[in-house]
Image (cartoon, rainbow, N blue to C red; front, side, top):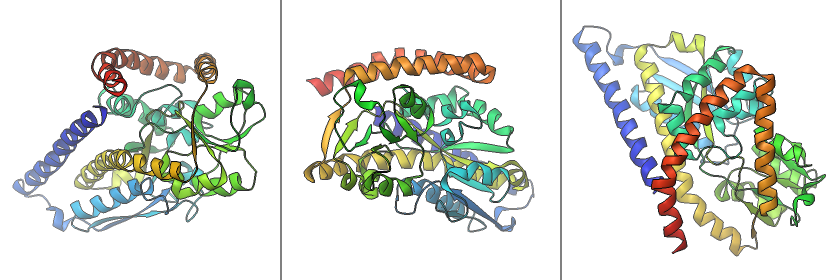
Length: 369
């Protein structure tokens, strides 16, 4: 039900965006302005936080590049680069801000050290589902709020991918209870990492391409990435046996395209519309692909010896309590975070009350009957 609703909403939004772009082009021709075929050739570079091997998440950058090229008739070209080719995967915002590249594809919660509110642009613990996140960003002012944050860095953002609800990570040994987390070395970013730290975990943040070696060689004891399809590609099942769920820290994480404001203002209006439309497509396409691929990949992992394990209720309850305490403490220190959190929290309450009636009630009955 949720996937159908997302597809319907996404396709409607996408159709409207493409139609608007087409109408805009017609208007330009009617008024005697420069037709798109006569617009300048533009070449951009896009730094990303992803290795090439992760074709679905790196595919978000590729979708943007492909559609921009197609919709501009090959006159606006963006070349995406894997993490480490231009800058390390966790420094994409810095590169876009400095105009080392014109644009990037990344996750905003990698940059909570610059501003803790960046977490909301991706996902926060016990936050919004993928469809709720899209509704907040596109219709409830979320992306406008994120762009106010990014304006301090000379950058603007566009939702450009979503993995859907993630898994809860790979562990070398089974978690018996809450105390099993004490002293555990785990790769986990964002506010989820800060919550894990409160539960006794030694948190580390690593880009995707470095996780397998760290886990395999014992530099870390546990790691989370996205879900079965990507985790299988990274080889995490070869380094750890126990696969936990749910990923309570990322119930619907959005990935983000960042554009330097100076580079953006230099673009013709037609190219700006094309880029925006391509990001809509990337957002919808990535979620659809993950929903299609993850279930099959999980079955392969289970056949290969992976043990699927749910988090103990005491861990989930402690994590939720710690998350609420963390939000409260950051709000007390950071007025900008507090204001954004209040707006976000109000939206979450409203949409959750509605979803309890429509989607969640159906899902509970359908899956348990």
